[in-house]
Length: 230
Figure 1: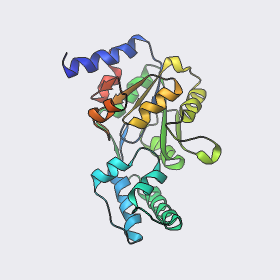
Figure 2: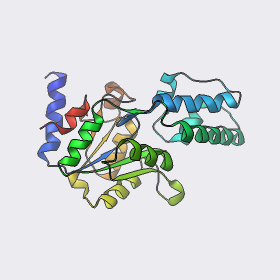
Figure 3: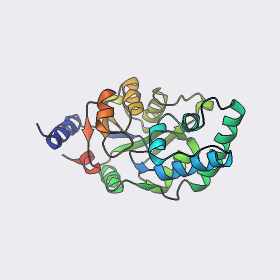
Figure 4: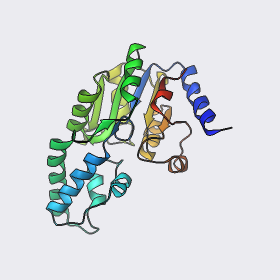
C-alpha cells in the first residue's frame, strides 16, 4: 500500500467514528512557532553569556514546555539561579515577540473554519505558557473555543499528563469517545493515550514520521486538508 493511500485510509477510520470534537496541539501542529521560539531562546542565552543554538537544535528541544526548553538549551551544570534568570529573560522576550514570525501552517485556517461550519467543537492544549497560548489562539484562530496552556501552579500538569485534555473535554462539554487529538510529537501521542482519546500525528510539524513511529504513532496525515477529508 502506498504512503498516501495509507494516510487517507487511516483518517477515514476517524470520520467513520463520527468525531464531533477536535483537540489540537499548538506548536508544530497549528502554528509554525519555531523561529520565534529560537529567537527568544538565543536572546536569553546571549544576554547571559551563553552559546546560542541552531534552529534544528531548538526543534529537538521543544515539546515538554518552555522550562524544559531552557533546561535543554543552557550548558550542562548551569546553576539553578542562573537557569532561573535565563528562563525569566526568555519569557519576557517571548511574550513581546511571539508574533514576529509565527504563522499558521498553510491550509490550517481554512480547515478550522470548515470544522466550525460543520458544528464541530475545538480546543488547543499546549505546554506553552498559558498567557502565550491564549494570546496566539485568540489572534490566529477565533474559531477555537478553548485554549489551555501550561498552568501547573493551578494543579494542571503539563502534557503528557492527561489533565489538559480532561479540562478541555469538560469545557467543551464533550465525551472522549466523540473526540480526536491531533499533534506532532511523542508527547502528544502519550498525552492522547493517557487521556483515553484516539490520536492522529501530523507530518508537517517538528518531528518526522520515523521518530513518531518509534514512539507509538499509528495514524498520520500529511497535509491539513486531510483532517476534513471524507
